[in-house]
Amino acid sequence: MTTDTLTSFLSWYFDHHPAHAAQVGSLEHYSTFGDFSSAAFEQRAREKGAWMARLEPLPRSVDRDLALSVLRGSLALEAWPGWRRDPQEYSGMVFFGLLGPFLHRLLPEDELVATAIAKLREVPSVFAAAEANLDRRSRRRWS
Image (cartoon, rainbow, N blue to C red; front, side, top):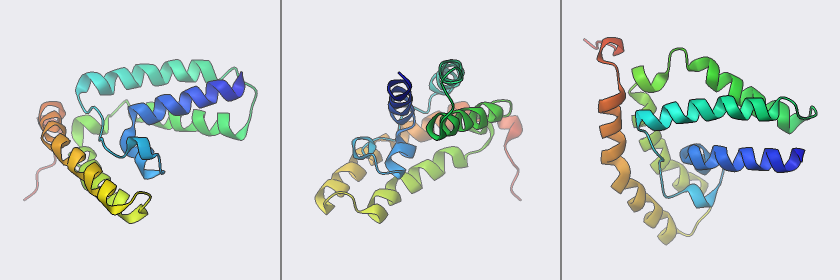
């Protein structure tokens, strides 16, 4: 049960954080940045709370404790969410999401190019989400 629950959590986490999944070598997540809509951020936060409730009763293990640590850290940041105030949440994901697979070279070059093209098609929606999600009152003034 513990291994199944942790495997399910990791699968959920990768599917809802594909850019992070790709950074740690999940090839099936190389072709997308994921959903950056406010609804998706809010849904992920709710689901993280549900995952904490599922994982906390499990017997202590390094894997369980690491998963809970990731969830607790993420939920702690929800009080002042970066996706509402920091444009780098979007631009950084795009730039590093495009660069990372070429640095890791886990796929042949033609497949790397194909994944980059798929991600490039998503860039307008990522930046549209940034425009919709960022709270203008919390944006930094650069002068």
